[in-house]
Structures are given as C-alpha cells and as structure tokens.
Image (cartoon, rainbow, N blue to C red; front, side, top):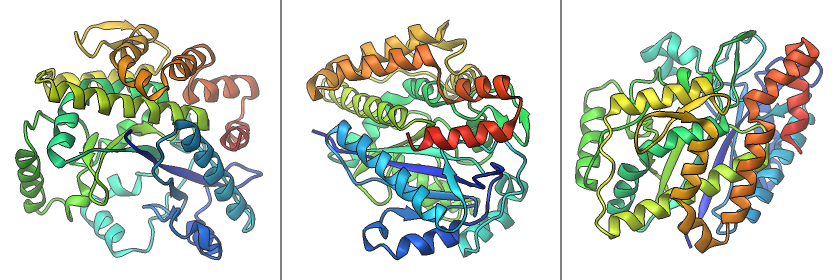
Length: 362
C-alpha cells in the first residue's frame, strides 16, 4: 500500500485581534526544545508562516490523527510565546508580509520583487510514494486534469488584504506569480522530465530545482510524487480527504500506465482555464469535467472524481469514508464558504479569523 505524507502551512496570528504575527523564528525556537518535534516544524518564506510535515502513513485514520496532533502542537508552541495558528490559506485581515532572514529567501526577494513580498499564501502539499521516477512521471502525466477538483474541494482563501476577492481560492492565483508554477505539458518519460527541469534551472531564472513549483512534481527529498494544488484546509478532516483522494489518483494513474492507457492530452491552456474556474467557483458553482473540459455543477465533477478513483479507494478500504466526507463537504461547504458565512454573520474579519482558529484545532 502506498504511503502518504502531508505538509501544511499555518498562519501565525494574534489570538485577540486575528492579525498575522511575524513570530515563526520564536515558535521554531520553542518547538526545538521538544526533541520529538525537531523534524516536524520548519520555517517558511514569510515570518507569519509555520510549516509542519507528517510522517508517511499507510492508514488515512492515522494520517488525520497526526495532522490533528501537529496542529495542536503548533498551537501549543505558538501560545507559549503569545500567538496562535490558523489554517487559513490567505490572511483575511490586511498584512505586511515579513520575508525570513535566509539567503535563499533574500535571493527570491531580489529576483522576483513584489511577487515574493506578496506570497503570504499557505498551502497543503501531499506526498504519495512511487516505485520509480518512471512511474512518478507517468502518474504526473495522468493526474493533470483531475487536480483542479482538489483545488475546489480545499478552497480556503476568499479574502485578501481585507477584501473579498470574489475567488474561493485566491491563494492559487497568487501562487501562479512564480514563473515555474502551474500545470505542465505531458512529459512521456522521466528523462524528458529531468531534462526540462535542467533546462529551466539553466536559464538562471530559478535558483535551483527546488524552485520547480509544478502542480505535480517528483519530490527532491523523497521517493514520492508531490501534489501542490490545495489550499491549507480549514478542517483536518478535509486535509485527510484531500490526501485520500490524492493517493487514489496516484494509484489509479499508475494502474493506467501499467495497462498501457495513454493520458488525456489536454493542453496546458485548457488546464489553466480549469484551474481558474476551480479557484473562482470552489464548490459554489461549476467546474470543468476533467475528461470533456465542459462545465458541470461542482457536485457532479466531485462525484466523477470519486468514480475515477473508486477501485483504488476500495482496495485500500477508503471508499465509503471518502464518499461520506465529500458529501459532507458539498453539504456544509469548504473553508471559503465557511469564511464567507462567518463574515456575513459577524460583519468582522477579526471574528472570521478568531473563529477559524477554533476550527483549526477541532
């Protein structure tokens, strides 16, 4: 059974005002005092962010339990120095991002200017084990049109600098300001994948291959495919659902490859349109069906994804749980919908943030 790991980026905020706090260095120093956490929490581009990574898990129940534990540990460490954490993919309140004191981050700030300074966006990256680079690239080629559905499910960033953006996942729009971000063409082989990355780095526009921000890529550090399209999810259960669906997509794609089934040949231009619509609508409107690239209600496209990965999820015992979680999300709303409901009810972005702090640790 393929293992799955999750990386989540959390927003550090003031527990009273909801305003982002540039305190990641202090939180990391506090976390480092606990030996068990030294390999869990990491710094990120901006000082208002804190990242954690789970250990690889085969059981989705175990993965969700670890996500919950890591979120609570992050809140505990942050609370000891006067802030807390919120699983929000952008800050609803106005913020002046503070770039970390790090040679890499400073290079990025010099190279990309305002695009770096405005990248206070928080995602959820899912790693799924693969047997080889060849299998991994075959998976990347075959999951491309389905990734937009994960963006819609996870969407959790409707507000930006104190205003409603009109998007469900504005994080994904900001993320595309990086020159290497977004969907990719078909590679066909690991050799072509690695050659393209080498050519991209050779332009000098990227510091190294760690700045390859494809929607799906081979991990630098692990024998995994890394899927990078999701907002950090407001609820741990949604994060576990996304991870479950990603494993199903990877396994389904690998089986298609072994059976000699060719990937769908949609152009990058069509994939970008599908991504845009998913970011705009989330679960509130229509999405493009990954096979036909024609509009359908979001719930129909989510169910098409479940049908696509049904066999893989059934084999791991995750099918019924995933179906129930999707139905709950379609009924109750994703993070973007929850945030907008809170804003409509309270009229206060501060209250939106402080209420989302509670959801983060639930």
